[in-house]
Length: 223
Image (cartoon, rainbow, N blue to C red; front, side):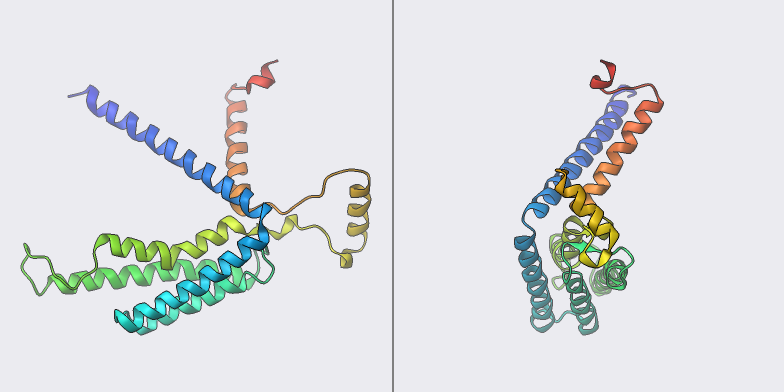
């Protein structure tokens, strides 16, 4: 067969493109939603962080999850909570923000190693064709990673805005006066833009620039 494999490759590429577009559209919509309802989003994220910390503690007590990894997970969410003090704005050079980025990767690595080692040790005591009863299923592991490892960092990524877009405050001196005069002249205020929204916009602008370089133009540019 020659044609069918090519059809399979073409379908895979198109499916990946549509999935990427759907994820980008969802991120853009969620970022817009958070910008319009920042107070509700802050309350929701704070309660979500506390709920996941309680869930991790419950898993440690009831299901005998490793104590030190549980402490690491709870400590990580406590650091994530520190990013809420100036919600939705955050400085990209803030130590708490940088520590949060590092803890996301550390948590993913240590929990992946834990589940992998647990499965390897369980299969050593049974036959190759038998399935151990004391190991979590793929659905359970994926759900744990989705809820307890990635959910809060992903929600913060969608919700937080880069502080470079924050309006100048009273202590900014001349910047504040110029901003006030611009606003009094009828220009719109500049609000903080979500990091996810800014990422999607930058990707779209890059695609547009590449299209212009290759000779492609938008329909309105052809008029």
